[in-house]
Image (cartoon, rainbow, N blue to C red):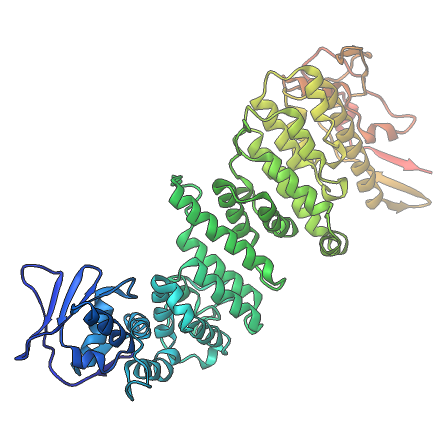
Length: 586
């Protein structure tokens, strides 16, 4: 930190021991001039003050015309402390200037009109030399000075201290990090995911934390200057914005301070962040951060038109989100726990952009790279599994969100099946027709073997769907057996022969079944033969009745056959079944 000493005489200013509202100069000469600043009285001498201040000359002249030696300084910038610096300079007393008090001193000197036309080397000139030669050349000092301008905003603007500090800071952020040789604050972990920071070198966002001490209005102006220079990468700017928000915005999981002062403060911050995010297309932030910002914007009641810009940014990066990121609390008067309507809107915007620019960007995401659309499909299935536990979530809302994902984005329906199963579990009061309707969303052909096995034994599913799953699984097994048989064919003389694995139990022939009008099964049992042990469940009983083994369909004409008996629970193998069998295909 830089300092500047002015004057060389010892400090003779004293405060009254009985009252802090009185300051005086210890001198052999009696004071003849009183200056009042914010109810603090300074008992001084006219000559040293009037010789360096145009304004005090005018005020003293006006006071003398009224036979008074008291001058009142109204709305004095910096208050009594700033005036004391100016007064000590007039007396030649030693006074130190630093980044913390230089703004107040400069504004006070401007108020008192301590210019060069009244005395060479006056206070304004001295302070300007200090600013240009030291303060504005230092990174930390520039940030400190800019931070102190908030208390004297209008004065700082008029004498252009704010503008000069912003330009100095923005210029330093644009420097190649390898040339940064000054101190900076960096307490965050290295951002290994986006490589903003690299081990053993100056991180690209080295400046982000120091700027977090600035007021949001000043911070906004600094970031506008940084972005306008075009030297800093978009992901670095995004990391800086995220750092600022993490410091000043409340955690959505913590109790929210809803008093007017805090709400207005948060609202101003979020609006500024949305403005900066949309200022340049190159600014890049993670979808997780954008969703947290969106959550806060809802809590503080940001204008929907402003919020729409943020929603647009989120929708274009929806494939980068996680299920946890989407769990945004519902707004009043919604009765659900989470804001399902908002997620529905985000999905619609991702798949059906409104503007031409959005359409071009989304085409790149969905058409050129369909995996991103598939990622959104998995994301929504996971989200449905979470929100499906909410007893207040209506069936129509659940189905609408599920249907918003196109078929091409769901190559596998295991996630959707899990979400629907969870919804059925938490909503046992659904009618038979409602269960049938929601289960129609599942394509049994897109279920994996593991999911099909679970679904076949799931008593919450309609019986008709269980039958469809069993039929599909039987077809899949038959197809797999045929494929395996073809790959194991061996040439013997002029025939192709297939070796059939030894089975210790005879195989069942299919039973005939039909579905009645109520969705229940009616069975017609064929003659009995060997019988196998069955698992006592609805789905396994259905599976037994439809069990068809492809090998049994290819038995030779002279071979002994087994018959199936329904109603028995144990299997006996015939004498011929223990022998290896060979089949010839001519």
